[in-house]
Each structure stands twice: as C-alpha cells, then as structure tokens.
Image (cartoon, rainbow, N blue to C red; front, top):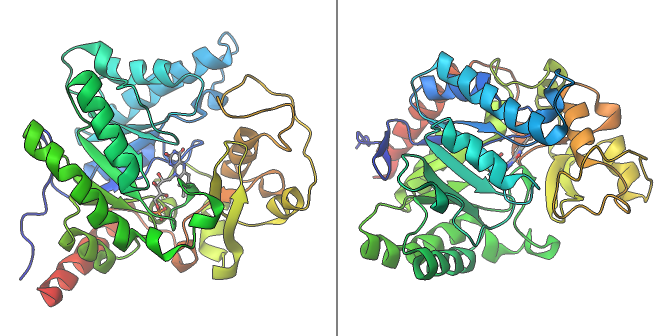
Amino acid sequence: MIIKNNCLKIDDLQVSVPIIQGGMGIGISGANLAAAVAEEGAVGVISSVGLGLFCKDSAFDYRTANKEMLKREIRRAKEMTKGILGVNIMAVVSDFEDLVKVAVNEKIDLVIVGGGLPLKNPLKSFGKIKTKILLKISSARAANLLFKYWDKNYNNVPDGVVVEGPLAGGHLGFKPEGINDPENKLEILVPEVIKAVIPFRNKFKKDIPVIAAGGIYTGADMCKFIKMGAGAIKMATRFVATYECDASEEFKNIYVNCKKEDIGIIKSPVGLPGRAILNDFTREIAAGHKKPFTCLWKCLKTCDYKVSPYCISMALVNARNGNLNDGFAFAGANAYLVDKIVSVKELIKSIMQEYNAACAMQF
Ligand SMILES: Cc1cc2nc3c(=O)[nH]c(=O)nc-3n(C[C@H](O)[C@H](O)[C@H](O)COP(=O)(O)O)c2cc1C
C-alpha cells in the first residue's frame, strides 16, 4: 500500500510533504534553502542564529543587526515562495525574545525553539496570532515537564514537538554519556514522546504532531518513523549538500568528502555536546589549545566568554564561509553518506520515492 495522505497537520497548517528542513545556523539555512524546500511542499526553516554577523550596515550594533537580518531573510524567502516557512530560534541566545518578536511580526508560519527549553511560552504575550510554536526536545521527560507546565500556567500547549535523537548534527540535548546509551535511540524516544503527548492531544483537542529527527537519511528511515506514529520527520544534514543551501561550496564539499570516522562529538561553549566533522581546529581545542578572540557581544546566555577556549559563533561562520582552518562544520552522524550536491527538488523527490517504496513493502 502506498501512503497517499502524507499530509502533516500543525493545528490549522497543512503541509503536503511531511518533511521539515532543520534550521542550520550560522547562515547555512537562510532564505535560499528555506524557500526552495517550501516550494516543494515541505517546511523550509531559516535559522536565526548569528544572522547579524552577515550585516554589512555598520550603523547597526550586533543585537539590532540580528533582528534586521532576520526580518530581511524572512521577507526574501517570502518573495521566493508561498510555501510554509519556519524560523529556528535557540532558547540559549541572549536575544531570544527579540527574535521571536521579529518572526511573529513578519507573520512566519512557525517558530521552532531548539537549544534549550523555554518554560515560558514565548508566543503568549502576542495574543491571537497564526504563528505556531514547536519545541525541540530529546526525551519524554522533557516533553512531559514542558507540556504540564504550559498547561498549568498558560492553559495551552505547544503546537508540535520535534524529538531529536543523538545522531543529529549540531548541539545535542544529551549529556556526553547519554549519546551512546541505547535507551536514547530515536526508535525508543519517538513512541515514548508520543505517549507523553497523547493526554494533551485529548485535553486540548489538537493534533500536536511529534516530529522525529536526528540521523534520518533515507525515505525508508522516514517510513519507519511515520509508521511509529510520527507526524513528519525533520532533516538537516541532507539539505546541506544542495545547490540552494546558503553555505559556501567549500562547506558543502566537506560533507561530500568526509568519512564515517571523521564525524564525532565536540564540547561546545554553549554548554552542550555537539556533533561535527572533526578537523585540526576541533582536535587542537580538544587538546587544550585556545583560540584568542574578542567577544563582539555576549550572544549566548550560557557562554562564559572569559574562559571559553574559542568563539563558537566565529568558528561556525568561518566554516560556513569556507575557512575550515579557523572553524568546523556541524553535521549529523550520517553526513558521510553524502556523495554529491543535488537540487532540493531532486532530493525531496528521491526521498519521497524511497518513502513510498518502503511503505509499500512494510505494510
Ligand atoms: C550544520 C548544522 C547546523 C545546525 N544548526 C542548528 C541551529 O542553529 N539551531 C538548532 O536548533 N539546530 C541546529 N541544527 C540541528 C538541525 O536543525 C536538526 O535538528 C538536526 O541536525 C537533525 O538531524 P540530521 O542533521 O541528522 O538530519 C544544526 C544541524 C546542522 C547539521
């Protein structure tokens, strides 16, 4: 049987291709990538992280530049597509509330909060708006805690959750020792999170889709998680090696050329472990070297810039621009499978073909 109704429902939003492209800072998923994904019927996501670093207008301080650049990226994406667009905002950034406000004012379809858990509903103060909110969590415990808290304090709950397992790229919501714990495999986490969300679906009469993420690579993977009850999957790594991805050619080629053994875990100044393609930069940091820097502004609530061995924002923007001597690339555990750069259209088409074929076999 071929699954005909792939549609993902997030409250009153209908997404025809149940794929959410993961937000990738700094400057990796901008308007170009997000719009291309949205054009194919999936959800395209602009990462708000560090956008101010690309601002050429010296009249702005960094905080203002971040807001201004997010506004411009959203407007640029909307000029390219009428599809569904989201913004990823990390809860650990110092200007979290500012960025949420910009996204809501620009009438973005959805905000995905990653990198920390917002106990307070950041959309609450806006009254009646169309923007949906999704939270990225890594355990049923976190889902339970947040849903209960929002229910009790705001009488509402998030419109969806992304459950991200330890194979994801970027910052991980696990302690280092939890990364390889079999109990934290995505296949275990997805049903647990669905179970945690069900009482709130019933109480609030909302779909509250659970979206699976982290290491999902093929349409067969996608079919597996959708069959488990996930409303959609979220992928980031696969979208890096596309023509439309906003990163430099050099950045994309590190994905094409990396090997399985190059992908590993770094300790990030954010205070979380992160999965990346290891290189001389990450090895030097792991060996205790420091990369002196001037903090432009304290962009992360959790970064102690006086003791941090390097500036993560600068390291990521350098890599994004192709300077891998002074930075590194975040990547999911399956990045070594990437062997060429393709268009977003081809990528989504091939994943959906694999998905339909896999689902036809598995039913
Ligand atoms: C290069 C890169 C940058 C990322 N940047 C962010 C980010 O700024 N904020 C965030 O919440 N997640 C970030 N992520 C995580 C992704 O949005 C996504 O949830 C995750 O990578 C999914 O796993 P996959 O890459 O195996 O598909 C990043 C991932 C990658 C690969």
